[in-house]
Image (cartoon, rainbow, N blue to C red):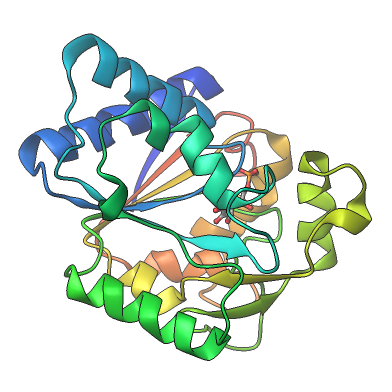
Length: 242
Ligand code: F6R
């Protein structure tokens, strides 16, 4: 694990964007695993700038998002489909057919989970996986549990996650209670992982991810077993690191 502590959110975002850009320069048809949420927002903006200003090319890139709320249509402004298009996909030249996000309204959920895993496997897995982290140390929507869920699955969101994400909804009761999330095995099979965090409310989760034991009640801790993880955190999120 390589740990980069930055002075600011801005610097964290620049460092992450540089790694994504470098990945695409070296391998234009990279398979990218992408996260939503506040953390990667500025990284996406910076990548859009690099695309606009010096032509970073996404035309061969393939992307798989980590998760989606269950019960939200793609056109719902709170859905992760909407988020990704608004903040990133509509501003770069990625091909629509190369964008994959779990379907939050499947007729058959078990089939959708299997289908998503098959699609990822069919593309050879992720070359680079971007992760945020929940205050409870979730990655994707893999919530603290008694075991690590390997593959794409339905998740009951923790109260803490619902509260944290309520800021994007009119009232906390509008936050969906369930989601579909890529599993831990799929994340661990990514060739390279970048874990991002900023702000003091992530300090405990980052400590658990890096220094706590590897345990399913702190899902991000599994990353200690991955051979190529770069943790990029601002100094507030790094506050509890020795
Ligand atoms: C989102 C995701 C989540 C978030 C995490 C942090 O696709 O997978 O694990 O990365 O909940 O969210 P923010 O960045 O909003 O604090």
